[in-house]
Image (cartoon, rainbow, N blue to C red; front, side, top):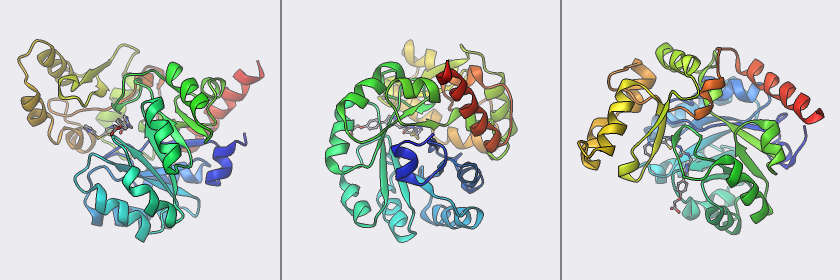
Length: 302
Ligand code: TUI
C-alpha cells in the first residue's frame, strides 16, 4: 500500500502511532516502527532528560524511522522543540495547539513535520507554513479533542489542502474519505509492547461502544476517556455546576499519570478513543498492523 505518506516517511504501511502523552515511550515506538509503521514517542510534558533518553533508547531498538510528538500546551514545549533538532529526530507530530513558531527551525533541520489538526482552517494554515502532511483528528479520538467527526473532517481537509492527509481512524474507511495514511492510538493501548498498567489495558479491552465519556468541556480542553466512575463523576459534576473549572483542573492534575502508572481507578484519567468498543484483545504491534491491513485490503477489494 504505497501512498505519499509511505514515501514521505520511508515506511512500509501508511500508519503512524498516536502521540499519547505518558504512554508512548521507546518500547512501543520501536515496536510500531519495526512492524513497518511510524512509531512515536510522546513529549507530553515530560522533562527534557527523560525525552532525550527515550529518543536514544528508540534509536537502539530500531533502525527504522520514528517520530516525537510535541504537545504544544506543555510548559516546556519550547525546549522539547529544540531537543528534537539536537537529537536528529526524523519526524515530528504536534498536538493541542498551533506549531507555527517552530516550523521554520524544524524545516531547516530537515525534520518532517506533521501537525495534528481539528479543523480545515488550521490544516490550511499548516500547509502554508510548510507542513509536510497533516493528521485530521475527529472527536472520536482519545484524549484532547476537537468537535468535528472523522467522517466529516477528513474529506473536507483532503479537499482543502494539497499535502497528504492522515486520518485518525480505520484504514479502508480513511482511504475512501481521501486520506493517504492513518493515525492509530487506542488500538495500540492494547498491544503487548505498550507499557501502561494492566488495569488500563483491561479497561480498553472490556469497553463497549458506550463506555466512553468526555470530561473537561467546561475548561475548554475537552478530553475523551474510558467511562469509569471517576470520569462519570467529573462529567456530571461539570454539567450540574458542582465542579467548577478550577476545581476540575485541581482534581485532574496528575490524573493521566495515575492511570498509566498506577492503574488508579479512583483518581486516574484513562484517555481512550471511542473505537475501544472494537478492541477486544492484547497482541503484538506487528500483528495489530498486519491484521488491520489484511482487513483493509479485503474491504477495498469488495
Ligand atoms: O493533542 C491531542 N490529544 C491529546 S493532548 C493530551 S495532554 C492534554 N491533557 C489535558 C488537556 C490538554 C492536553 C491528551 N490528548 N490530539 C491532537 C489535537 N490537537 N486534538 C485537538 C488539537 C488541537 C486543538 C487546537 C490542535 C490545534 C488547535 O489549535 C488551536 C489554535 O491555536 O489555533
